[in-house]
Length: 178
Image 1: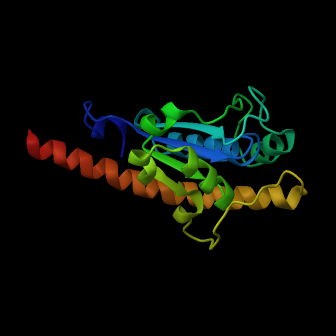
Image 2 (image 1 turned 30 degrees about the horizontal axis):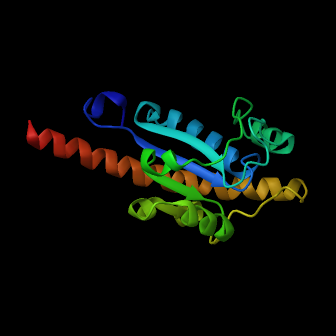
């Protein structure tokens, strides 16, 4: 689907990726998703951001190991900066995708009840991997950062399949109204 194929009246989908400190997993997912959405011509229709459940690293760039491993696979995440999830994020974003069960519990605790349906685990969208979480690589080695990328790439592809389907359905709905 290209930008010309979607109704100009359709609001963009929006995705917020969340981990604990917003310096490893969630900026990696942010960068991978942004890159893959651009490759599919969906950038104008899908907004993306990332945040942490805690404010450990305010306005810091992603961990240097995350940046290096992402760059090896063609993703530039150097422009991203850490921030903590805010109350307004729950209303603003279509989907809030967390990296693990601890993040899930924390985000649900902060979420107003009317927006709880937006919260999911990123790995629910994996097509090839069977994992309940994207594990935190912070205290690990190079293989841990590669594993995070493997899971994130898989989940982002699955997520974009779902989003493309929803955008196509929205386009068809608008076409019927014309």
